[in-house]
Length: 92
Image (spheres, rainbow, N blue to C red):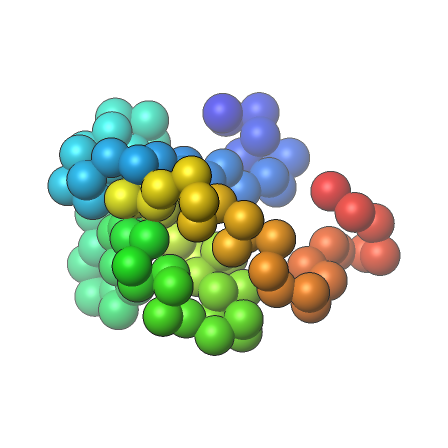
């Protein structure tokens, strides 16, 4: 994971686990930092993701590292936004 971070690759965890469990595992993996004054959630649930617009989903994907309580049927939501997110014109 350290090599990914050095290369600028963001690591995300998508799990069917309860949000509390997912955040605890995310902390152990170094994906979740304790929020100080950040308005960002530590994790988003499948229910919360379903309520997001495409633009909000793109922002969440860039700012949140743990996505919890996500049933397999919801995993296709990650391909929903059509806005390109690659830097420098290259796909990653």
